[in-house]
Structure formats: structure tokens, C-alpha cells
Image (cartoon, rainbow, N blue to C red; front, side):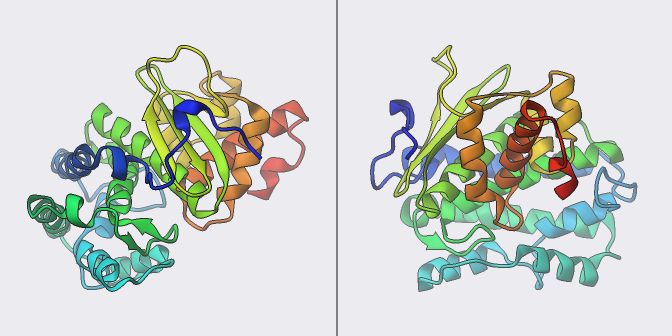
Length: 307
């Protein structure tokens, strides 16, 4: 069983940032939506985006308040009714694209704004304090409502970076928020898998970590520490975001020195916990990082041919 660093050892009722900083977690999530709207306003949404062969409009569609999409209202209804488990978010994206891919740029932006405003209203009504820890369904399985709302900041950060191909300006604060959401989500998933594990991510401006004891999880700012702390990834926030979303080639990043890891054994042990969960961004990050390090230390072989 993994030995957790004391800095990442959670209390049994701890649920990551949703327990330790619900107010700032909620406002960070709302700021991510605002940043996405600003990015959309900065660019030509009819142009091709960075990934999937999508236009800028298609990048925005999954964030919109559409009848085919799972909105905050649906998430809260599930939480209030005690409905937990897993949802197929990829199916929602397919249905939204099928129904709305011909909308105008302004209609796509308006739908995103409706989603943003729903979160803002929930925050104003005291939702994070009263309902933030209620469990609800997600593509990662059962998560607290506030953890799920904050996790969207990772997806927003990815999409805002995708929109740079359409002319959107870079947004470092959003990238940092997306990275924090990614780290916290990793701890949540390890906890849901009843795993004892930890992960750190060090960037030039931050040192973040998360640890699960199989019951609760703790996500913490480790910037006061100067030494590595267990399994970790070292890279810029943007590189980690791009790896996690499958936008970047891990072998080339490693060979160029843009990513390194600490405690390879621990990282390899953590990867299987999350690799098998469809659509999880953190799983992609860890699986790719672990595989590249395993491949490099044992001659790349056929590891990358599996993906």
C-alpha cells in the first residue's frame, strides 16, 4: 500500500477543495466560464479550432445550455434526489453537435452564457455551502456537486487553448485554474476507486498535490516545499493541460525536456487506477506520462502503439 506524504493525508470526511475552500472553488469555476466567454468574443468562431476537426462554434457547443445537454439543473436534480453513478458525457456532446452544429457564433456564445449564469445564480443563492458536498452523477462516477462544477474548469481551459487557433488570446490564469481542477479530480477519482495514492504537479509558478487514503482526499498547495513529494509531473501548466487532453505528444515533450517525473514507480502504480475510466482527463495525463517514462526506461518498445 502506498505511503501518503503527511501534507496530503486527508481526514476521513475530507473531499478535496470542496471541503477546504468551497468559496474560492466556486468563484474560480465561475471565473473560468467568464474566461471562456472572453476567449470566444476575441476570435472568429467560424475558423478551425485546434483539435477534432471542429470549428470554434463546435468547441463551444458542449458548454451550452441546450435541451440535449446535461446542465447544472440536471446535476442538482440528481444530487437532491440521491441519484449517483456514471453518465455518458460523450453521448451528450454527440447529440448537442447533431442538433446545433449549424447555429451562429452568437447563438453558441449565448448558450454558454446561459450555463455561466446558472452557475452564478447557484453561487449567489448559497449553493456551494448548502449543496456543494452532495454526491451526484458524472462521467467519472459519483462526485460532490462542487467538485464536478470545478472540474469543468479543466475542460474550459482545454477549449480556450483550442480556440487560440481561431484567434483567441492566451489566458494564463484560466490554464492555472484548469490545472488545479485536474489535480483535485485525480484525488477524487483515486478516492472513488478506494485507492491509497498521491500525485503532485510542479510548474514554474505552482506546486500542487493531491492524496487519497481510499476514503477521503486532500488537494493542497505545496509551494512552500522545495523538494519532490512522491509521484509527480514537472512541466508548465499548459503542457500538463495539453497532455491531459491528448493535444500533445508525450515522447517529444519528454525528449525535449518539457516534462519530467518524480518517483516513477509510484506514478506507474497510480496510472492503472484511472486509466480505465472513459473520458477522464486526469487518466489520460497519468497514463501517458507513466507510459512514456516506462517506455524510456525500458526502451520505448510497443507501449505507444497501444494508444
